[in-house]
Amino acid sequence: MVPALSRWHPSGKSKIVKDLQSLHAEKPAIENPTKHSSTLTQEGEYFLKVLIPSYAAGSIIGKGGQTIVQLQKETGATIKLSKSKDFYPGTTERVCLVQGTAEALNAVHSFIAEKVREIPQAMTKPEVVNILQPQTTMNPDRAKQAKLIVPNSTAGLIIGKGGATVKAVMEQSGAWVQLSQKPEGINLQERVVTVSGEPEQVHKAVSAIVQKVQEDPQSSSCLNISYANVAGPVANSNPTGSPYATRFEVVVD
Image (cartoon, rainbow, N blue to C red; front, top):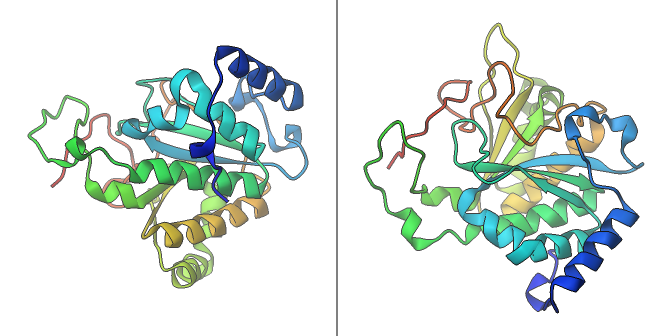
């Protein structure tokens, strides 16, 4: 169930401080996710990495971090975002790492998906963009997509033998599920999963993907939220084209 944040009215900064203190007391946040492994997570908790368009980040965080604090409180999840302007390579999207039970992962993603669907009208108008400049407009199709970053091992479980599993996920959910291309030779540590469809279709498909995260003992092998200092190539956020992310992104009508 998506947290009822629209009915929550903060009473001021003192409440935010208390909420943060309560959250830290109940479950410490990950100070450096790249140094943690699945053996250090609480039993029954998992990780999910989600790409968030820059236009949606503000509404997810909320003024002074109020919305994300309340989201953590209501779902029991721990949520971390990459810093402003610290985008996933080749995009203007921030990386969100969610830690919690499978139910919490699904609840947080449902809330994120709702905010992603609220794409600003001004950003849907194509314009000429210099190839050396960050993307300033957004393909309206992005509002109907969920983009998840999963380790190679989890990607293999999502695909299944001969593509049987991903085909079943699409048939059962009605969503379209694509994974970024796997390169020959050099193995990337992660792949990006793009789920497209109507809200309920995307929710069903993401829930199926979360189930595969639960089944993969190596699902917590890539917990970094910043890619600024990552050595070597990373997966392209687009399911077609080059397997590798490029430094710059160009608007495609």
